[in-house]
Image (cartoon, rainbow, N blue to C red; front, top):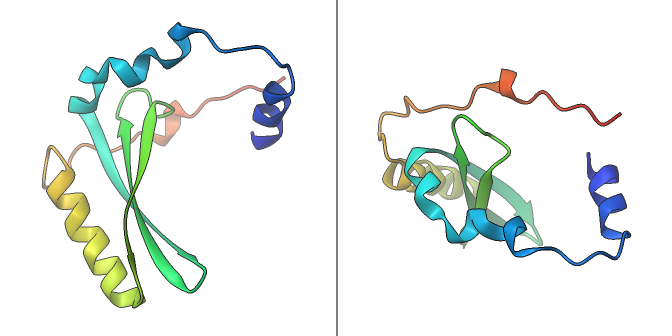
Length: 105
């Protein structure tokens, strides 16, 4: 997938205003599943929250929250940050992996 996205960057065509309307029209953020993502970079554990639409999973926003030095604290903090940011604190709003049907031919 990254190979095809990289190919689009070499077309040297400017984007249109319609390409970024999902950022301005943020009403879709009301129906998002929140996913925590903890990555280790440069000796620190970075906590990211991903807000993905539960019906259109390729419509998402990824935001960096905080850095932690301890992996145990990082995973615990990520868990609580996800629960705090989620619309449904029980986690019933989840992504359906069957919706990821992409065809790059």
